[in-house]
Length: 342
Ligand code: GTP
Ligand code: 5AD
Ligand code: SF4
Image 1 (cartoon, rainbow, N blue to C red):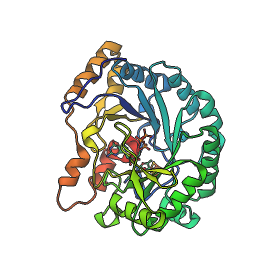
Image 2 (cartoon, rainbow, N blue to C red):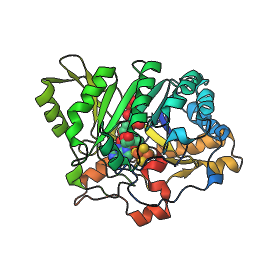
Image 3 (cartoon, rainbow, N blue to C red):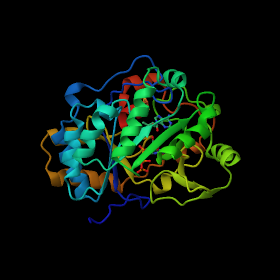
């Protein structure tokens, strides 16, 4: 294993999230609430071989955990081919995917065969009308079918992510856990974050980890902390029947101190934090012919200077509201959560 490259806070470069498209087939209210979006120019989107070349440099530097994201990654034509290329690399210890599940019924089998190891599906509601209101598209049935198919193909390696918003799906905290428990998949509750793109964010709409745990204890009885798994953002808990679930409290209790993740956008910009304003243009360097060594130097130098702790800084700021105004998002769509990978 390559020695870890450490940033200014001693956090290693280990975990890379690779966005393969900025497009999405849903319009979740916490992520894409606007009517119109500015998309990345098509010619800027990395070809699979370019993505794989950049990933190789990250692997040289000690990254061993990859997650494919979007937008909605299954919208990227032939995604399973990229999965195969990445899965074949011996230094890739973990290869996961985050999806909204709509296209899983038809693609899950190919992804499994290509070597995808784990999968996370967003599931915020079990009610078709709430789904349609929250995502501004129909499709809950297909998502539920996708989850069933995934649970069969990746036993014990499927997670469900639910962003809880007051007034939208906070009435479903208990039923979502029952749903996950019956299928043997791990549910994670995610606090609604004021990330770029969340232009309707208000602190009143956040349902905190504390409140979620109180509600669950009321329904299911004693909850015992199950210990964190390394740098993962979720704190895990166990019900008395052994059911494990997680809470990602990025809004009220950020995990910046242990954050080893960075993000490559579909057009090859590299971001060191979910809240970072600027990315490093790896596409430019690659397409100008930078060698593997030169790219490695650029990446290592940038990571060593990393000081980001975006969610902690947001927590400390007074009078919280959306972190990026809608007009700035239109000027630079890289500031959007859906562009830098949820
Ligand atoms: P595991 O390896 O399975 O633990 O995956 P993960 O939790 O890293 O991946 P996932 O895509 O499921 O992320 C879950 C959620 O955590 C995201 O949808 C975000 O809401 C939040 N999250 C992901 N990355 C970051 C990050 O860099 N910073 C913060 N503050 N929150 C993040
Ligand atoms: N707050 C929390 N999580 C978010 N995501 C997108 N926007 C937000 C937000 N404002 C995450 C969700 C979703 C994934 C793709 O991105 O977890 O499931
Ligand atoms: Fe929803 Fe994910 Fe699409 Fe954002 S990228 S609108 S969270 S499905």
